[in-house]
Length: 201
Image: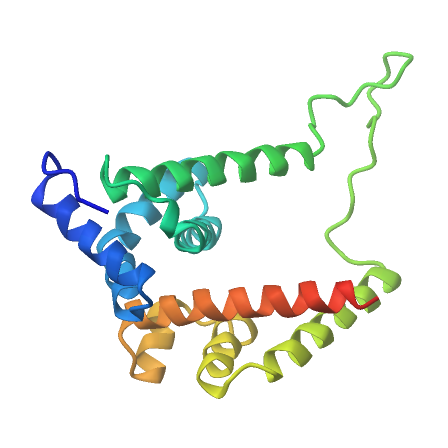
């Protein structure tokens, strides 16, 4: 695949990294994440106004882009393609979130009285929900135990100890980009485990 000579030097650099990533170079994935993580994160933060959601959506965007990286066309910059994927994913997330939220402006019953049309669920889980939640956590832990040690440790630090990416990098002694790339790969492996498990039942 020939690179478009009208692209900027930065875009041509990215194209070279994309080609290396397609060939299986994990360092190329990490480099692309390093170059665009912060810009993408602040874009997600502006759209969601939530640091936690912004970080998760940033990782998701890289995940979606890397999963179909062989579909990237050098006719335009990789950053343009990546940000389009991230923006569409974020818009979908916001739509789903709104669909699951009860509007407090619609608090009128059929007779015009000020009564909630839908019951607003309490933040506290009832006993049945608590059991289901705990079962899900146990299932997740079982899947995590099946990961290779270098993935398992990072997943446990991120999702069980709830450490930030920076804290994980400091704790593990790994570069930040490597931590993010490994966590992306681990999440992909966990997803496939869960999918295979569902198909067996």
